[in-house]
Length: 163
Image (cartoon, rainbow, N blue to C red; front, side, top):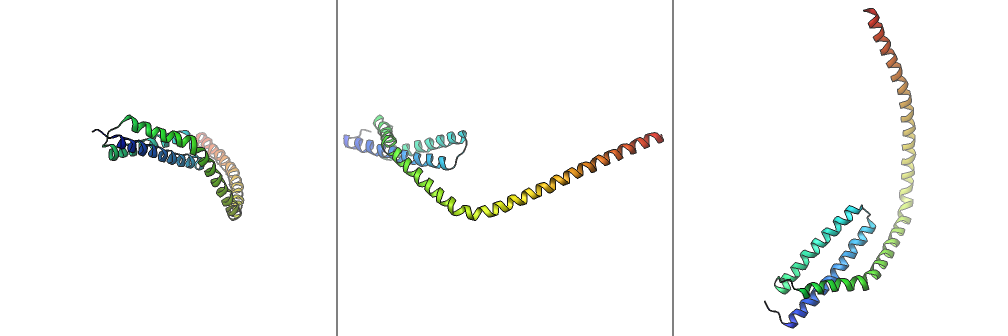
């Protein structure tokens, strides 16, 4: 289907706006990745899932705007929007978001630490005391096993001597 120049401009600008939105969502993914650190493989899987989802949404956009025709100007518009977002807006957004999350994290630590620390210290003392008791029980149990082994060996010797 042939699109007029005005419709092509609308599709181009819509895909550029989609590129900006995709970049913004990807920044949120990066921020979440920074807050909840996982391994490198998990980050790669997240990236693949993001781009699969972004490709699906981009195709849906093209389906609604351009009757499903993938045209070069639409793809260029999407990548141009993402490029402009990552160059102009993303550094400012990420710096501000990291500052906000660090401030919230520090405030939560100041509030939660006095509440959480006493039970943790109590539990640590109890665990250490239990470990000492367990160590004593194991060491005395080792002697018991050794004594039983000697007794059992003696019993075997006695049985062999009787034969």
